[in-house]
Each structure stands twice: as structure tokens, then as C-alpha cells.
Length: 285
Ligand SMILES: Cc1ncc(COP(=O)(O)O)c(C=O)c1O
Image 1 (cartoon, rainbow, N blue to C red):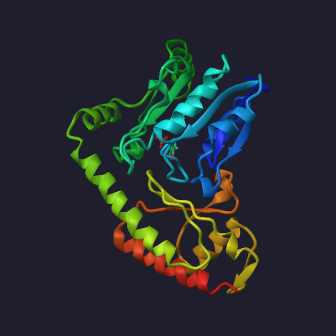
Image 2 (spheres, rainbow, N blue to C red):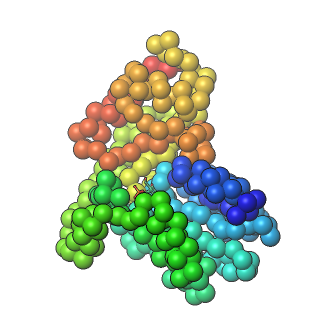
Image 3 (cartoon, rainbow, N blue to C red):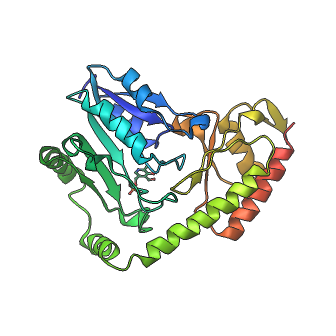
């Protein structure tokens, strides 16, 4: 593990880099841009692979961008991976059920990819069971067994109650999860209209999960109410103090020009929050 290189598509879920560092690996970013809907490409991946590359990691639908890799994009990524015999994929599909563009494609289901892929999933998002702490992987047997050895010592296992609840979620009526995803789509559209009405903010249109990840660099170098905004961190602190709205800085996700806005809230709260954000941003000069 020590010194091995782990590629991951950026912006990325905050824990990836820290998990890799904890295990002695070296995280290497492949950057997606707003113009490309924050989706790194197979060509970028190909250019970044070296003989020391252990795996590539991504989430789709993505936290923090809400971007979703299409079947064609994943096929192109799979072709690159297959050219490098010792390279694996870690596909984080935890937002699988919150996807506004139809079917979610698992790279593990493509020819020749199952034995190269660790699919990560869980109940936190699609079944709104964040606090229940039930997740799972689907991986070649020797990898699953190795994970079990570590997991067994860290946490022993999920509680029986939580496992029963997860079973009820996955084997019961899927109507509530579908209704939740429809509500997220409605809120995505609601917030999109409100974001597009704020001068200076640039956003793509997220296709899943429950986040916007707009570029806010137009506000860097401006001040108001005694706050000077030089970075996305500063902007989040300014909006927390002046608008009482909590957002997450893009720096945490490897994208320092952006902020993450979650729309996992009621329509009324979102309208109010966007009104306050617009006002506070309008005061920066
Ligand atoms: C992309 C991604 N992967 C994994 C997780 C971890 O989920 P859990 O809460 O089930 O540990 C999260 C949680 O935010 C996430 O956004």
C-alpha cells in the first residue's frame, strides 16, 4: 500500500484523500471542470496512469457536484482501466437511487470489469437512513474477505436492528424512495431557477444526488459588513455570519473556486435561504 498511487476524479467526496493517506497511499487528482460538468474524462485518466497506479476512485452520482457519468463515459473509462492489468476501480454508487437522468450504470457490469471493480454503496442516501450506518461493497471475493478482516476489528458489524431496517428498505415497496427522488428533482429545479437569478454565480445542472456546486470566484476580492472575501472558505463564513445560511467550501472537495449547496431541505427553507444568499452576495463590493 505504501507509496502506491490512487487516482481520483476531482471534485471528490472529502473522505477519499484522507482514507488513502491513512493507509499510506498517495492521492492524485484528476480535475473535472465546470465547463465539462465536473466530469474528468477517460483521456485525462489515461494520461495520469503510471505503473504505480493502484486504482481510480469516483462517485457517480457525485458528491459534491451531482454529476452522473453516462454509459458511454463509463465505457471509455473501463477501456483505459483494462489496458493496465493491475489497476482497479472503486466506484462509489451511494447516490444510485437519486438520479434524474434515468438508469444508473455500474462499471462493474461491463465486460471484463467485475474482477477489477469494488462497488461501494449504502442505505444512507437512497433510503434516507444516514444515522443507521449500513453500507456494503460488492467486490471480488479475496478483496471482500480482506475488507471483512479489517471491518471485523474496527466495528465488528452493523447492529441487527439496522440490518433489519436496511432489509425492509431494499426488499419492501420502493415507492417512498422514488417519491423522495422526485422531490429532490423538483427542488433541484427550484434552486436552479433561484441560483441562475444571482449575478456572479456560475453553475452546471446537476443530474443526481442533492447538491449544487457553483463557481463563486466572481466574489473573491470583494468585501462587506467588515468581511473580506478572498476564498471560498471566506465566502462560506461570510454567508454563515450575514445570511445565517450554512454552505460547504469547495476547498474541502478539491475545488477552491466553488461552494457546495445542499438542497436536502424543504421548499420553503430553500426559497428563504436562496433569498438571503442573493441579498448577502449583492452587498459584496
Ligand atoms: C459520495 C459519498 N460516499 C460515501 C458516503 C458515506 O456514506 P455513509 O453516511 O453511509 O457513511 C457519503 C456521505 O456523505 C458520500 O457522499
